[in-house]
Amino acid sequence: MTSTPKIAEKLTDHDGPRHVAIIMDGNGRWAQMRNRPRLFGHQAGARRVREIVEACPDCGVDYLTIFAFSTENWKRTQNEVAGLMSLFRRYIRREMEAFRAENVQVRFIGDRPRLDKKLRDLMDEAEAFTADCTGTNLTIALNYGGRDEVARATQRLARDVADGRLDVEAIDEETLPRYLDTYVLPDPDLVIRTSGEARVSNFLLWQSAYAEYEFIDTLWPDFSEEIFADLVKAYGNRDRRYGGAKG
Ligand code: IPE
Ligand code: IPE
Ligand code: MG
Image (cartoon, rainbow, N blue to C red; front, side, top):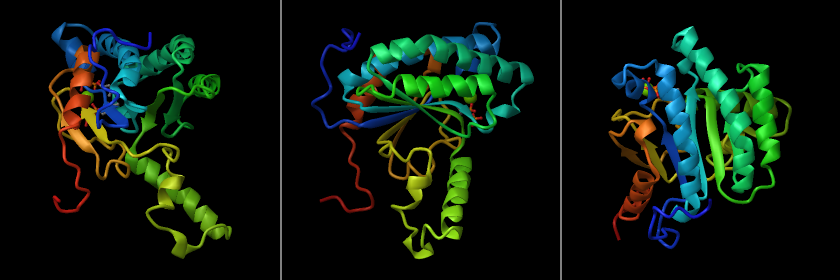
């Protein structure tokens, strides 16, 4: 399904965001409101992802990046963390085929070594399996933290300097992002956070320097392609000045 009948009017011709990033928040509260365990909310949240990925072509969005698990989320109970890891494994195993069928190229960003081997293997497999896909670029941030990413990038950069591959003077705003996990992605134009929290929680810190933000009250399991399309449309009315003056 590449065309979404619910989005009546195609948005591809508008001045829209090429890269949308989403902080998918509110699964726990969604479950709590139903007197269900938090993992029930995470399962419902995972089910929302495919619809949003499929809405991207009609919305003119080439890159979608979603925050699935932060470097701080290990602080949760062992039960919740284990449940999430098992959900990620099942999710990737189940969705891989569908993503390829939809021509979606899947990538992961974040610190992989801390994830268990079975999950890491599935992540590698999904990336290889969809590597030739030329449609939407889906990036899943898993064990991702912006500060951690910059620290890891700095280690690699320092190693290149120590080994004589990079001059200290050559380090600038163009060089540094080449060491980030997102080196193949353009910066996000629009960052959406659901659940009413107006904070960034360590997501794409370097990359979002000039992103537009939308903080909406909807809890992630209630997010829909209609809301997504409305936010994409609303972005067209924004005036991005990047520090310049209004002309
Ligand atoms: C987002 O939902 C999913 C993850 C962070 C893994 P939460 O689990 O943070 O839901 P709330 O914020 O507690 O409602
Ligand atoms: C951010 O949500 C991380 C993800 C959505 C994966 P959190 O729920 O972890 O963020 P805080 O704790 O409210 O800042
Ligand atoms: Mg949360």
